[in-house]
Amino acid sequence: MVKPFVPQLIFVEPRAMEYPLGKQLVEKFKGMGIEIKETTSHNQIRNLPGDNHFQKYRKAKSTLVIGVRKTLKFDTSKPSAEYAIPFVTGCMGHCHYCYLQTTMGDKPYIRTYVNVEEIFDQADEYMKERMPEETRFEASCTSDIVGVDHLTHTLKRAIEHFGATEHGRLRFVTKFAHVDHLLDAKHNGRTRFRFSINDHYIIKNFEPGTSRLDERIEAAVKVAEAGYPLGFIIAPIYLHDGWQEGYGEMMEKLESKLPAFAKKDLTFEMIQHRFTKPAKRVIEKNYPMTKLELDESARKWKWGRYGIGKYVYQDDEQEQIKGTLAGYIDNMFPQAKIEYFT
Ligand code: SF4
Image (cartoon, helix red, strand yellow):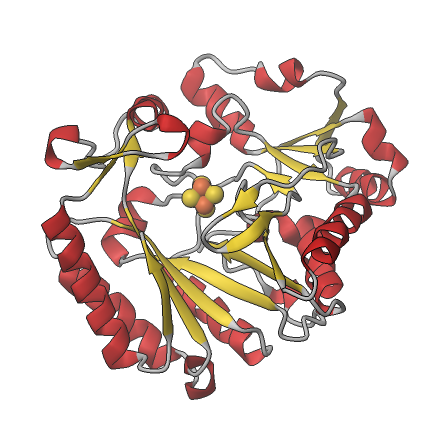
């Protein structure tokens, strides 16, 4: 069982102390006996002590920076939402294929922003622009926010903020089961709580430092019982020997554990495994022993964002994936909605 994250080292940006949450967090971490340093420069954090890249990378992944979000322009977040809402960047997990390795390459530490009210104000502006349409905000584009939220409760505040709006919707996805503090949040059904799931072989081999499948499902049951709309992202869908059985077992487990009422309003998103050349280089550097197959010649090349080509499965493999997983979903969760396969 993965324990809730406790940072080994904290950095505080001076401006963060101008915000109540900044002060609260510093007091909290002092009380926990964690080493706290002040930083005015990211370089100090980037050059953490360690004999080699491997040690430095691991140290960074257990370092938390308490900072202020300066840019309040939100990125877009298709296809699951209109905007990415920035509360945290980085993650303590060690998934070999994590997208953050390339997007946040030189900043693997976790950074939590304390100017939460300013971020909410900006979100309210975006909502006003789109009224009377709904505006969906995705809170997990740059982190697994649930993994750190037991310490900060920022996500809980966000859930309650959007719960009190008419046109705002919040979404996020997690591989962590530490959800207890979120169960009594006044969500008003306006937050879709999603879990990222995968089969046993994949979680065991490629997702160290995250909650196991059984723990994620147990947390999903609690979340459903707390009345949240629930969803699952099956990602990345990765072909390995016995994948059909592996995913079949995963879906059966889910089917047997979820209460009947939760199955009525359920969404599934399906994302096949993909990689880019830069991602492959970073994965091989950070996880040199990985069993992850990253053979370009076995894959289909596809234009990606920012002009960087990505390697996805061949068309016939994609059809097999869609057919198999959609078949399980239709059989076991006939009322669920498959939002997309990509
Ligand atoms: Fe990356 Fe998500 Fe794994 Fe964290 S839990 S390392 S964000 S894939």
